[in-house]
Amino acid sequence: MTIDLLIHRLPVVIIGLPGIAFLLLAFSWLVGAAPSERMVARITKLTMGLATLAALTLGVLMLRSGVHHVAVGLGDWLDVGGYEFPLILVVDRLSLPFMVLTVVLAGLVGLFSTNYLHRDVGYFRFFALMHLFAFGVLLLTMGGTIDMLLAGWELVGLTSALLIAFFQDRRAPAANAMRAFITYRACDIGLLVAAVLMHHYARTAVFDEAFGGPWPNGDASAFAGSATLMAGLLVWAAMGKSAQVPLSGWLPRAMEGPTPSSAIFYGALSIHAGAYLLLRAEPLLDRAPIVSAAVVAIGFASAVHATLVGRVQSDAKSALAYASMAQVGIIFMEIGLGFRLLAVLHICGNAAVRTLQFLRAPSMLQDYHQIEAGAGGALGRTGLHYEMVLPAGFRRWLYRLAIDRGHHDTLLQRYVIGPALSVAQLLDDLERAWVGLMMGGRQSTPEDDEVAPSAEAFVTLTPSPSSRVSKHPAVEERR
Image (cartoon, rainbow, N blue to C red; front, side, top):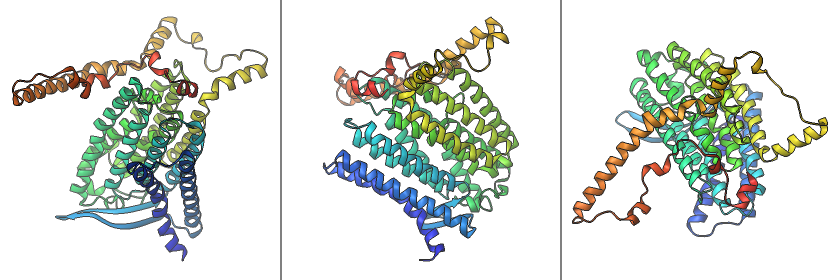
């Protein structure tokens, strides 16, 4: 097998391995023959080990042969009336780092989780979703068309919501998962409309064809005056996925999931998906200076907000989530200012560090006590002493602002979520009345309410401290 043929085969192997692993686990569950923990662990280690080996091999071969762009065609999904939906995998200087990062960190988290979730009732479900997530991220990053990127984007959002609700015997995880899913769906409209517009204006969904060349040398001249609109829609989608203000309220709620999923999702891969989308749409941002300036402003506001709020968090996972949000805000600023390669390096470094910190979160307090014991007493304060530069009244105002997380949830609840729930409740009442009329005047019963709970059950204004404590001893110990 020649090197060129191997380079074009390896991308299919890399993206196919986690997909096949998920299908294998899902099929075994459907037929009622779920494998044991040891078998699931072996499948995970083999899948991620082979995918990591293939990704590193592909990177070395591309570097040695001087190839910076590899496109692998897999045929057409659909071709109707001049609209084509081709299946193309692309490995270039943008997708290659994300691809390697995905398989390495997914393998690391999978290896950690084999012991962390030992004898948990959701052990099989966790690993099935983790393989589906890895497949979704690889599809998102390696997809050569906006349609494939959208498919991977939706898989990432779906698995994210399902893993936030992993401890489904408690109400808080399910409610917070629904809040995150609603935020995703509201922002995913931007990516969906942008995909339709790309088909309309460029007459193609392939990034290399629409932008006139591979990343980072593309140009969006084909979109003319629509570049600003498309860029704005993509920024809206990226804000929701990367938890940028004012859409950041779902991120601390996502910490209800297991620590390994928090590490791979909100420390490493999922939270950087929005930044990847903006990097892939770089030519559009170049032709839309107003949108680029908005990206810088959003990133700056998110970094400041996350820094302030992260300082008042009372649990390690929420503090790490806000630390990750602050870094993603800085990455948004780098993208808006045109420092694309710096943003890629920043993403890789931040993802690796946050993964390690999240996985070490259960031992953080013990580590701190050991450091104190080694230092011979309590550690001194670090950072800026705000009482020396800020008035007391202003510091109290900042503290209240940080405790309420910038009032974002309050405003969204009052002006967005509340009215939406009112409309949903009205529609539900109308549906019940209509069904009752069609059934001869039968009224809804409490049993009906238990089967179909109202929309308010899925939305919480602010997560209370008690909602973060598990009633299950094993779960409480892990947290």
